[in-house]
Image (tube, rainbow, N blue to C red):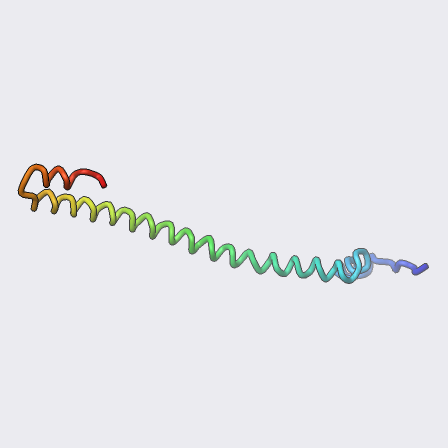
Length: 91
């Protein structure tokens, strides 16, 4: 039977290999590397989505303003009451 060496003087990563084995230590390292690399990407995605959300709300406000101007133009250029009423109905 193999003797387990004293692990108190070893670095933490050597103790992890001793306790879990080489394949498990490699798997844990790969998971750690992937997760730590993704946090930066997720932060960038979050910032981009927040900027896009602000942009979309600005476009919505401008679209509403443009619609009101177009309704005003339609009402002002209408010749009959029926045409004016058709300008004010929501489609």
